[in-house]
Image (cartoon, rainbow, N blue to C red; front, side, top):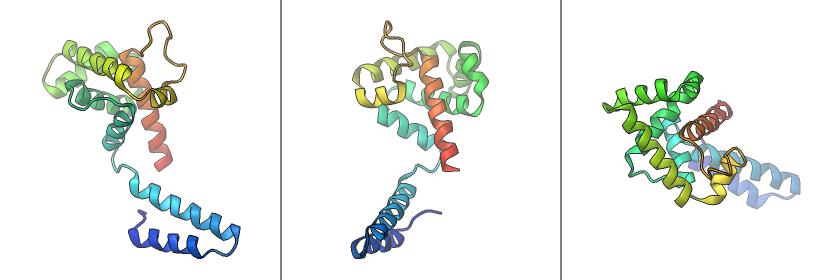
Length: 159
């Protein structure tokens, strides 16, 4: 159930009029829950787009749309993670009426640009030490797999 503005105002009023610390904690918790519910993206696609936005992935690149679709496919069916070149890229290419090679290159470009221009703290939070220090950036498969795992976790938390 989504928190309405009216419910948020009532929770805020309870917070302001709380007499005890226990009442303040309860009101703060309720208000936080209502606000989080209100700001959660509604669909898996919206969640992926929000993730990429947090990372600093430019949405004007053609690789952005390919990456969104690839993450959705990988989150839905984990076998794509083990077959990026011969499974995932051709599936994305067919959906966008292009070639697997173009999809691979566009996603690689998006990862490179995100890794060089993106928010370092957010990248570190999501990828941590899962990326090879020698290369400095994740492979397409590592990027898609990590984002698909984050998406799955968020969907499980939302359920």
